[in-house]
Amino acid sequence: MKRWQFWLGLIISAIFLWIAFRNLQPVDVWQKLQGAKYGWLIPGIGVYFLAVWARAWRWHYLLRPLKRIPTKTMFPIVAIGYMGNNIYPARAGELLRAYVLREKEGIPISASLATIIVERAFDGIVMLAFVFLNLPELISLSDDSGFIGDIRTLALLGSGVFLAAVIVFMLMAVYPDRSLKFFDGLINRVIPSKFRTSSRSMLERFIGGLASLRSPADVGMVLLTSVVIWLFETGKYWFVMHAFTFEVSFFALMLMNGIVNLATTIPSAPGYIGTFDAPGIAILKAFNVPEDTAASYTLVLHAALWLPITVLGAYFMARERISWRSIQVEIGEEKE
Image (cartoon, rainbow, N blue to C red):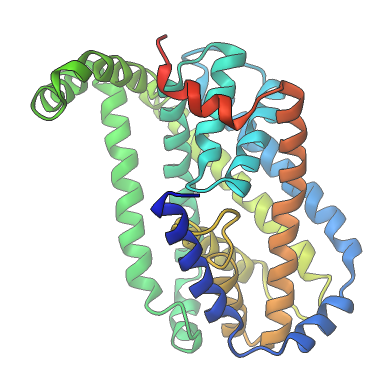
């Protein structure tokens, strides 16, 4: 609570919430919420859990060079990570699932974090692909969105960042010895002498975690799985849409999915409050969905994305008898 990042996240979320709801009347949104057909959330949540299962499979695939772990073992750990991202600041769920994996399977935290960073890079590429697939239509809409602005420039910059990250990781995986030598030079110049040995050890484990990127076939499989994951998640957007009185194309929902998830990379309060809602409403408004309908849909969608996986992750975390306090104490003491 005392960290400046936490308070910055709250301020950013407050700004985004103001942008999202400044022109709305609460009574209008409430009426839309009352009239929604919430039965459509059931298949939406079901297809979303398929996406989570696919994420568990992808992580299992990335970890194969380190240890073969069944997907059914990975699923609870992924759910715990989602829960952590939803209730702790700064995407702490990623660190949380790396810690749980170490406790259960003995995978060093720095190695599993390497695979998690690879996941995020591929997720970014797929999300930006969703944007680019709809770029011609988006260009005609963005001027009226009131929030999105120049998506072409944003998408190009984002693509460059994520593609550069994947290329760097692939080079580190294919040339581990050269990478170690290069970064060892940086460590000697930048890191104080008493931390150099531990830094080199972490670097070695991190590069070891990138081993799955040495094969073009494996890279292709990870990319394909990432596409499947985000199509499943867009399926949830589609099912929840049917609870309300509007209809846009599946491609429009792909666009919304890509943009809102890119926006959630902006620091915010836990659960992506505001950074999910404001761009989601703006995109639907650009597709001529009434603002009160767009707001009520986005709120329900956000809740349906947040609540089920958070409850499931909390259950798995309680079952493992893990506390966040113990993780904070132990996370800097990895010696393996």
